[in-house]
Amino acid sequence: MTDTLDRIQLICSSFERLTGRALAEPGADIAAALWKAPRVILAHGTEADPLFFYGNEMALKLFEVTTEELQRMPSRLSADALQRDTRTQLLEQVARNGFIEGYSGVRISATGKRFRIEEAIVWNLIDESGRIHGQAATFDRWTEIDTPL
Image (cartoon, rainbow, N blue to C red; front, side, top):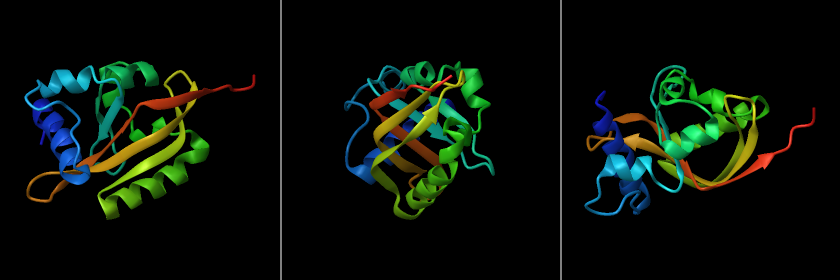
């Protein structure tokens, strides 16, 4: 699955199939709706060291990257170094259960700004045949963390 629109549709269809809720209004232009959503939406693939393949406008601003930079970034680097083991456990739980809600954890932007995400939903990107294409996350709550100099 390489086409951008196919991947965006997979983000939406997987979310709805697993949670029973929609990321976009019925009949909406899905690509535009996700891009302008009032929440962060991110997705990564299934590589050995998964790379992000999608981040909406809010995600790019929060993580302080361009689309091109995000798509070259292993998703593990979005987590604060001290929280990467916790992040790995979270992704293993998502792989087993399909999705989780209420996740909180510390993330870090490309410029080193740290922030705590809250009440995130993380889900598997599963096509209609049951094949997993990665995982995605969405959240609309975060708090910047002051880092001492």
